[in-house]
Image (cartoon, rainbow, N blue to C red; front, side):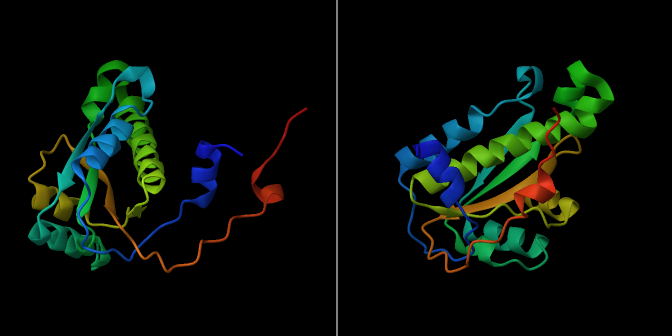
Amino acid sequence: MNPVIDAILARRSCRDFTAEALPPDHVELLKEALRWAPSAGNRQPWRFVLVWDRGTRVRLGEAAYGQMFIAEAPLVVVAVALPEVSAGRYGDRGRALYCLQDTAAAVQNLLLAAHSLGYGSCWVGAFDEGGVRRVLGLGADERPVALVPVGKGTCTEERADRVAPKKIFHELP
């Protein structure tokens, strides 16, 4: 096929990590993948907090309802939406929707880039937003959207099934 399609089809969530550090050049590639995600009106209404400190990663795992695998990855990227950046051009729709869509697109870029570099990752959306905000010292205008642990993984979980195509695709003539 091609490398992009291969990465999309092969990527899966990983919740088992080794402590092996990520080399700086790989971290830069992950950051570039985040930075070059598409966004409505090119507003880029996001911020990404890279968390290396184990104590902070533990507190993030606690804020994520005890999902402590988060703390085991050497890096956790917290994707933060900036609703008012989108609202500046798109009003309420930018504040309520576009900033979240844009940040989600960046997270998908991160997941695919991590996979292509040989790392495991997992999109974690189940967390106490206020708790994550407190752990990171985020302001009221910053909304945490996803926690993404990244690292070398053993990735023992089976890939989740997908809904049958006939149930999700509808083609109009």
